Image (cartoon, rainbow, N blue to C red; front, side, top):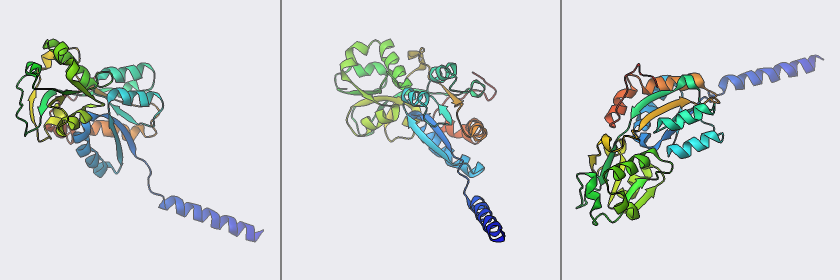
Length: 259
């Protein structure tokens, strides 16, 4: 009996020791629109340094990320490039309505390589046959592609350039297509343009009023770490995160603004 009791105590002590030495496995998984890549790659390490919570980002097309979350992908926070995707998930009770936040407004640009002889100054310049291939994000699921399509339509050149369009899966891939020389020009996010080596000009927001790129975030209801998740959202919209977002060209809402 004494031998069994000693064996039990030793087992319990070993389990407690393992528990004490076990590292904190808390980490946030954040699905984020591709236009956030450079900004969040800066913000993530700062947040971890302040809170000790590691962050894993999954960057991609907002529409595709929304589908993954709806199918049960293990995500804590969703940062979309268009508020409609968050609102749709909220209606399906996948996103916590109390967490919704419009965190930025994006802009689109016309982008060409720095060594290109073609440097358009306005979107109507793309009607020139010299622009044999024009890359935009796929408007079927990418908000930046939807804004690009609307801008081309409102400029009155969609029909003329439609056959020359090359679609990227998301806005970051669209920039890569142009940067590698596979197309002459691309319509991409300002946040990606400002950190590139290319030539770019801003497209007036008035050319895509139906797709104003109001970007919204929300906590996924199934998140295992809602407290850390809300800390991250506050960090992005706080004194450490906002200057980084502004550096990449995002138009930020007032801190008190709600959806």
